Image (cartoon, rainbow, N blue to C red; front, side, top):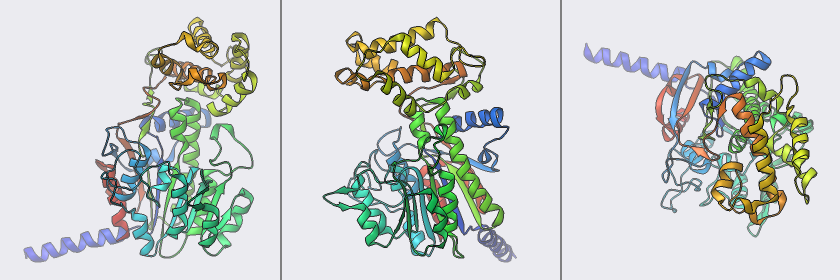
Length: 467
C-alpha cells in the first residue's frame, strides 16, 4: 500500500513538472534595477500615466543574493556569469573561474544543442558584460574585440543591441566574422519588419553603440521593445526558444544618480516586458517570463533626509533630458570658457523649469551648491582633497588635471542631487550596492522562482528547464 502511495505521489510530481515545463522562456535582466528603482518607477507611472509596472503584479516572486567570488559588491561581469553559468567568479571576469583558468559554460549553449533557438537582446552594446556572459568568455570584461569575435561562433539565432565597441583589432574584424558565419546584419529600424521572413541567423546592431535614453525620445532609433518583439517573431518555432533581454541603461543612469532618467529607462524595460506578455497571452501554458536584475546600482532609496516622510515624484517630470544630453548642452555653452554662475543658473532654470509653476523651487542652499560646482569647474585647486571633489561632484579623482570640459559634469551632478532630494529620493553610492535583488516570474513553472536564494541558484532553476 505504501509503495502504491509513493508511486502515485511520484506520478503526480512528474505530471506536474511536465505539465508546467515551458517551451518559451524569457529572462529579463534590469541591469542595476533594485526593488527601489522598480517601486519609484511604478509610483511615477501611476501619477503621470495612470499605469503601473506589469511585473510587480506577477504572482510568483523572490529575492536573489548578488555577491561575487571576490567581493560582497559584484560587478556586472561576475553577476552575469553567475546568472548564465550557475557559478561565482571574480569581479571583472566573464565566464572564467576564480582561478583565472577554467572556463564556465552558459546554459544557453546546452539549450542550443537541445534544439532551442537562442536570442540575446540589450539596450547597450552587444559586447557589454551582461549580454556577453550568455555567449562569450574573457578574463577581462573590457576585451571587447575578443568578445565580439566569439559572438558568431555560437550559432545563436538572434542578437540585438548596440554595435561593437571595438570591432577591429589584430585579432580580426567582428563585422567580417559575422558575414563569415552567415549572419544577416540589420542596422536600421525600418528593416526590422523583414527579419521574420529571413532564413538563418540575424544580428541587429544600432550604429550608435547603444539605444537612446528613454527620457530623450529620439525618433527613428531602435527601442528595446521593438528588438524584443522582432526577436519573438524571429525565434518562434515548435521546439521552443530562450531569450535574454537586458535593460542595460538602468545601471548607467543609476551610476549617475540621475533620478528621472532611471525612471524612464525602467519604463523602456517595462515596454519590452509587455511584448513578452502579449506573447504569453497567446501561449499561456508554454511560456515562462522571469524578470530580475544582476545587482542594484546607486543605493537608491525612496525617502531622503531633507523631505522626511514626504515624497514628490511629480518633480521628476520637470527634468526634460538625460544627464548625458544635458552634458552636451553645457559643453556647447561653456567649453573653453570660464563658467559664469548667472549663465549656469539660466540654463538650469530653462531646462529644469526652476521657479516655474509646478517646477523646482530653488532656495539659498541650492544656489550655493550650484555656485560651488561652478567654482570647482573654474578653480579646481580650491578643492585639493580629491575625495571631497568626488563626493560633492562625482568627479574623477584626476579631473583637476584635465580641461574644463572634464569638470563640467559637476553642474549635472549638483542638479541630480538637488532634484533627487526635493523629490524624496536618496542615493548612497555612484557604484553598485550589495543588496539582494527581486525576482518576478509568471507562466509555466513560475512557482519554482519563489523564495530567497543565490544568483547561481537562479541560473540553475532556468538550466533545468531545458532538460
